[in-house]
Image 1 (cartoon, rainbow over the protein chains, first blue to last red):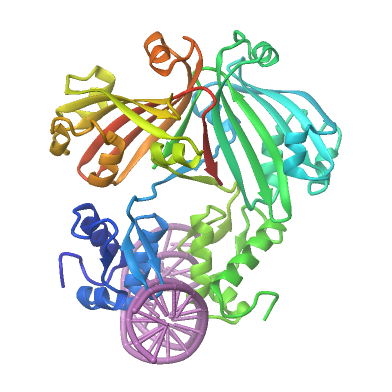
Image 2: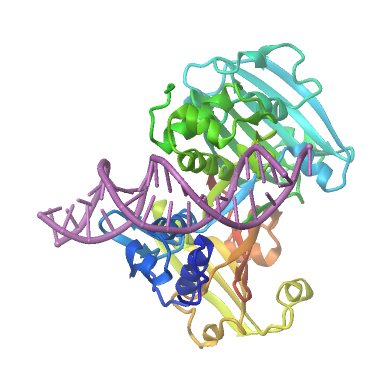
Length: 231
Length: 231
DNA sequence: AAGTGGTCTAGACCACAAT
DNA sequence: TTGTGGTCTAGACCACTTA
């Protein structure tokens, strides 16, 4: 048929991407219906549908029944961020990883935390992750004991970080993350061995299971650490 | 059939998620083949395949021909970050947006930049984005003139930010992003109206088109600004 | 009312990799 | 060699939304 080799959804996908990139299909413009494209490419409608579904998932097109398919005005570019265990991240950088628990106890949470968890019983924990003996990340965490009663077991986080235990035991259904830059407060600075006011990369992450919020963590990364994403 | 309503890939998907979350299918364990699941759920193999494809894309399972499908040892959770235009981000926060170009000229780039672009001719631009009259983001950018010759037109970025122009005119094929926390240098501090050493959220983004790297931008966000992601 | 995307089916063939 | 996922097809029906 055309430039696209026939009979492969990937070929349709790539040709559509090319047309969008080359502005043969302009932003906001309607593109031909699946049946028309299937005829053009000499393939089944389902094959075109598969290609278009991938493009829609990537945010390059917007599809609506009856209204048809349009090229996105502004391609919603999704960064894909693989969330690594801190241990793996540090070991991948070639440094020796170690970990120290500062404390773990059931505790009443301040209002901003309560706002996320409602009336649930909460375990509070604090820990430091070291890279090559130097403090790298300070972790403060709240865990929903109503959903994760096993987390209350004494000594559980002495050797394994709460993060790793949760990854293996907590169901995952979604969450939110916020990244900001903050000046180190006195306690943080002391724990991380940096000057007060030093710029920390603060990552706050709320993880939800199917039955509600499971854990809220705040990771304060020492100056110089970076977070990498792929687009 | 089972708890899953028949004839819907979403039902298969949800039931599989439930079994993974409930550890009926344990991390690392092999799960039944598509044909077996299709029989169990009373649907076509393609329907099971669709459900499994989504789970694999979400990182919950790993699939290999002949070897079968396994529950991922550690669910690769990837954040999906919609990258907004700075203008939209500021307007969404309810503040008035404005923009000032500090300069745009063809210029020889320092080695770290050359390393990304090779021998290409490069346009350098600098600009500030304001929120409600206050400096919010300082933008420094390099644009590949070999791929985007239109960017060299004088006065182009006077009223529209380079970011918005590029989003509308540059093909997009991928990229990388790195986030870090940095102390404001003197020039940055002055431009943003903050004290030297204030913690800035630095976002460096390299955007690639199908023919090579298109633009490298460094956005320095004023203290207090946050970057939000969904998991 | 009608046109579009969304999904399902039953069957088929292929690609890959473990055996 | 063989079992598994990956893809394609031709047709069908449904769901949604615009006109």
